[in-house]
Length: 64
Length: 479
Image (cartoon, rainbow over all chains, first blue to last red; front, side, top):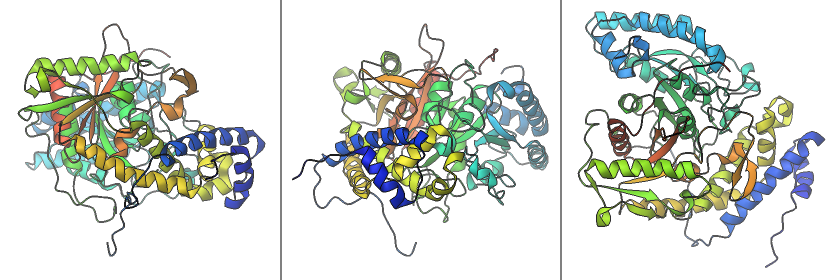
């Protein structure tokens, strides 16, 4: 497995046009800092082993 | 009973109105006068609906004259400005939503309070789109802590906390996604109830994070909190997250604790030595409960340091789900009007639009594991105690806090003790404690098993009867 590596600045530059948002220079650093925080949170969540049969917590009830 | 009837609790006001010692109109007039006198300093209200309130009061007085007795007769209340109020644009703390057309109906929770005789005085300040633990707001100005106007109210239900603490209303409604009822309860020194996830209808309230949003009441007494909770429950087909559970009524036998109640204290993550006042508050509450009797404890003491498993990971997962869902909700606004967001939420929302999908789905899977693990704890205990906030209210201009030796932004981190609890959907009564030598209050979370709000409220009531928890009206002094 390739080691996970998250470059928040590169991610912002690539993804902002993908989702159609403009990030002006005054906001860019704040967005990067927030993404780095999210990446640390994701690291905690992704490192937790879960059985294949654990489903997501959302429940969809047809016909409701 | 205090001299001015509006200093009374909701149940005291209702008793006076039901017994025709005072009219609902008189209560409302006095409350409107107090808002005029004080709210410029506190900034709790964003909209005061005076005409509506007087008309509602007259209806209550007519019902009393016709012989009705109403649980909340004439009780003045306000709602966080994410609840729909007929005739007002639901701003949800934002500038952008002011362009929305006015709501054409009240939220069902408002309707239920009105049916019980309570009178809505208006909409209350909040952090933009509820993404906030501070009470700061660039558009409407910060709500200010009535116990010290230089300090934060906590957020995001900032005005809901401030209005009750300042005695502007006896009751308020707020929302709690990661702590937004429990944090203002702690900072403003009032009682707050975050019910079980799925307990109360969220329809006709502006959403923040579908997977985690809860609505609930604030009050200055546990009886009032229970009366409001009893009234607010009920079915609503228009809220897909509302659970099909029978209501649980708390106010009838509020003073009686179940026999042999098992109480534990959350250890590990929740006992951070960097937050001594939070730990002290939990000590004080635990000691009061032990001393009061009726509490079963293993080996004659509280089951100390019960471990809520993977609490830090739960907080991380809640963070990711919140960031992604809320940013997706606001995507179009972020594409077209990002400059109109509060600078303190904008960067967080923008970042949330860019999260890899797998992070969020992993967080939702982890939530299932966590729910099962937390549910197992309640085979051993009935109640878990944990701090509501790491410290009492910060000064309004304090933007960072110390966490495990690092200086981190305060806005996303004040809720570090509330977030893992709501992630499991557990009901919590926040009880305010005034530690010896401290000027400002701090609350403790009284956490019960899912769907057992009655137990959390009974324990909160016991703490109130013991004098350990209380919510006095603030004396407003200059800024």
